[in-house]
Image (cartoon, rainbow over all chains, first blue to last red; front, side, top):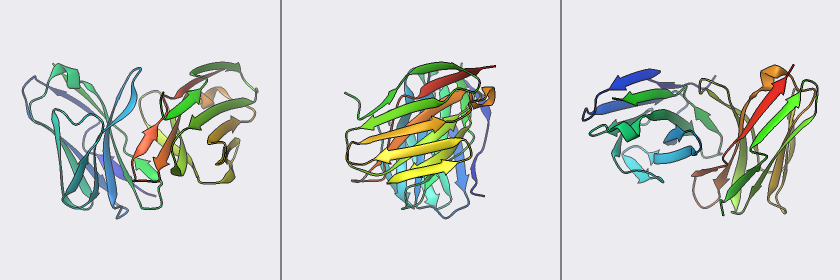
Length: 111
Length: 109
């Protein structure tokens, strides 16, 4: 079975903290994605990566950065967390054939 | 206008009913995905389609490339089918997925 594992299921952080969300996949996929999901807004793409050290901005990259030093790991970084970044964060990975696999999600609360 | 439109947004039905959820898109695609999200957030990929029809248990997904339309059908619906069903398309210009807003399905016993 393909596994996409996110480091935390629930996180609570304070405003201004630097937050790292980690995602690891075990299928040697080229493509990895970070989304956030908010009620009424659906899934929105933050960043994606199509290769090691390569990254592309998605629809809502402001306030976020990413790191992909190894193929299996894609990290989402909130440089200075704010309350409007309270959300469900979903990581996904996919091959060039197009099928996407999702992690279990991280529910982040910024207080 | 959104590039991926789903209908209906909400659907409540009785156990046993035949369910249809529709997805229309306006971009060229490499593949279309149907996903299921249960309360609590977990997302499961149900189907990936580029043509024709696929069946898995009580779930059937069809796609008409010429009409840019896909449907997800659930036969003999059950309360455990209650979830949000999401249509997403992989644009053929890159690998980005474009998401529909989702259809919230409630099946009453």
